Amino acid sequence: MNQKADPLIAPAVSSVVLVVDDAPDTLRMLCDALALEGYTVLVARDAVEALERFEMAVPDAVLLDAIMPGENGFALCRRLKAEPSWAHVPVIFMTGLTDTEHVVRAFEAGGVDYVTKPIRAKEVLARMAVHVQGARQARQARNALDAFGHATLVVRAADGKVVWKTPLARDLLLQHFDGGELDAAVLAWVRDELARRAFAGA
Image (cartoon, rainbow, N blue to C red; front, top):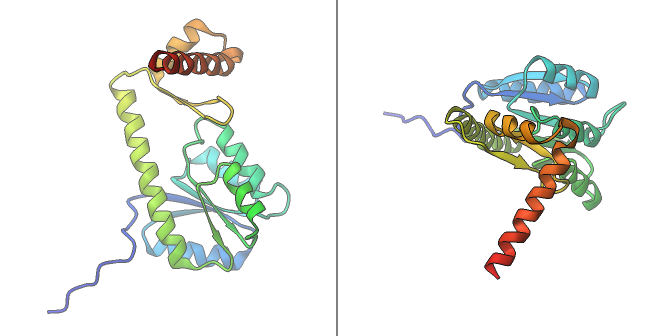
């Protein structure tokens, strides 16, 4: 009896991927490859369309062209990461730019990974599966914290911005700080708390 070979990539479970690229051939190839793996695929040809897609449905991951007409991928990624309800979505850059400077820009903008053009579908699928799985596990952890009423927040180390918080944490913070002062106040508190613990452990 012939046994079916194990798939290279574990099938996605109702995962939604947004592909942002202005090249029709790239869009077509990626849409076909992702759909065959069980992903639901959304398409955008520029930053404006990408933001419109996010307003309609937040995807599980984004494949983002670095260089596009209008707003480039680096700027779009920074905008996505600045929105707390979108910041958790992993962004994988697609670029023909392989210089270290551009790779660094991709990560500094908030990207979690990058693939170089011309795109190799199997490589994209392998990377996508890893990042979607990680994002799903993180989302499940956040949902569990919400469900059990824990006061928890996540602060981005680079600038101290609060990128996510449970409802209880939000309510407690709003009791003590005005909305406009919230991020700065939390950052100051975190720094003071870390300094206190470091001193206590010295």
